[in-house]
Amino acid sequence: MSVRMDNRVVVKVGSNVLTREGGKLDITRMSSLVDQIAWMRARGYEVILVSSGAVACGRSELCVDHELDSVEQRQLYSAVGQVKLVNLYYSLFREHGISVGQVLTMKENFQPGEQYDNQRACMEVMLQNGVVPVVNENDTVCVTELMFTDNDELSGLIAGMMGAGRLILLSNIDGLYDGNPLDPTSRLVRTVCPGDEPGRFVLSSKSSRGRGGMSSKCHTAMTVARSGIDVVIANGLRENILPSLLDRPGETPHTHFIAS
Image (cartoon, rainbow, N blue to C red; front, side, top):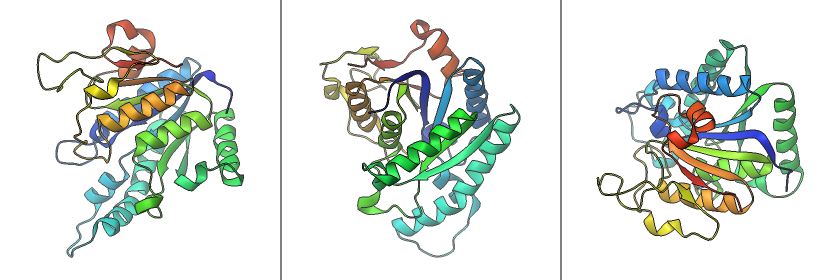
């Protein structure tokens, strides 16, 4: 297990944060996210960004006039979309004088061995040289049993691999609720302590654009917290959510899974 570094943060941003209602990429929100990460960097944080959005990018770029099965769609849209996504990040971070590097990974890269060591060493040297790793699953290769459950799982594995002090999962709601988030009587669960069983609050529905949902985030958060890393689930649609979480956590709605 890597030594934990308090100033090293993994930020995972989901498709529901990065896309508009019609499924197209929200460039304004993406730009705001980059501004917030630049703010973190200026305050001494090392940031690893796990970003969804490649499939949405590809879907908005192509007009396919014949039927594709689910695997073909994912491979095609992600292959085209990943290029656009990383180019956008490149351009937006460049305005802050920050370089980015693309890391496309697969589940097998997290098995102990040479691939695991090489991947960790690659991201370590990027961070040491001021580069923000932008991580995503290699969807053009990873299908069926080779896939991560979703980018929540991937971000948890990256946090453990890189010895992050904190994992921030940005969703389109404020965190874990003790009932249906749409029910006005439901309350936000602000803190999950070691030994708590928050899974009883989780509904089974998934996000409308990504593969995950609150069940996945909760499972990842509990697993990662048990490994000694603090985890936060927060609303990436809120203005300046990352600075708010870091500077004014008591005033910012979120769910904090306390590391054990």
